[in-house]
Image (cartoon, rainbow, N blue to C red; front, side):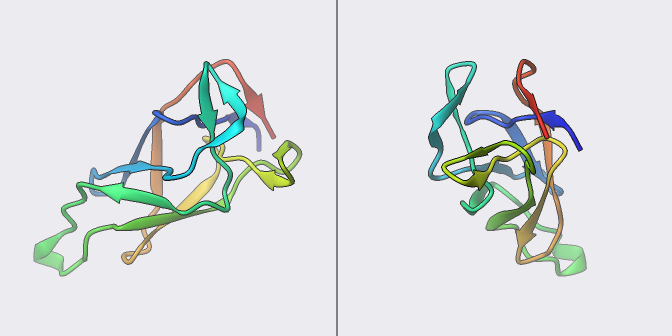
Length: 106
């Protein structure tokens, strides 16, 4: 499914409001001057409160499991707005909210 590629500095949140970011951006492909990210790199989630009343632990990391299928960088799929990521430990998805709007890929 086509979608906008996600660059370093995009607003990506966990379900509980924590900010997710890639620790190792991909400088081979830049989007609006910012590096992209490949799905093989786990993301770090900062500031997730979890849900204490329901005993759901805070998100610490997240792994993208669905990315681009036709466009790659160094043989790896790129992170795409229509992709899917799972946060660990609760197993909830990440929500890409604000990203660049010039480059679409499948």
